[in-house]
Image (tube, rainbow, N blue to C red; front, side, top):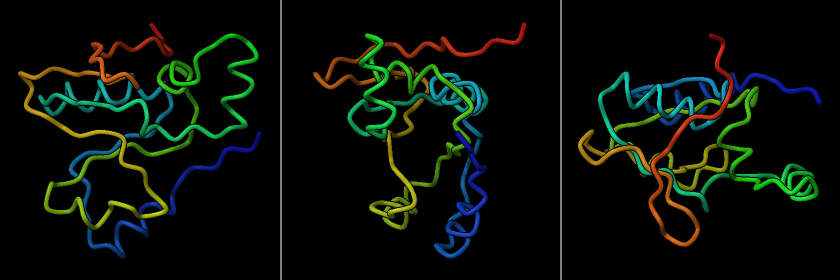
Length: 133
């Protein structure tokens, strides 16, 4: 009910001596934002369903309304979270950090942009979030 921008992440990254290779706020839905990063950077991505952090306070109402929580996370918005990428050599610095969650990895553009569901199926990622025009 009172979202706050994650400016604290900047300090955590500084302390870890990690400079993101890309970063965007999640305002139009996770799927939309990862597509922006991939297209702007000319890369592909595998995004893993089981790695997306979804709080139970969010999951339960989605389920009550017969909605898939992952679909809501991918296509909702106004999350006030930051989505960013790091160099492979910085992976260990951010891995298992309690302030960050690794939800996928970047690939060569030729491999495409996929959402890997809980059964391991690769689904082409599409944005269904907010489109202003």
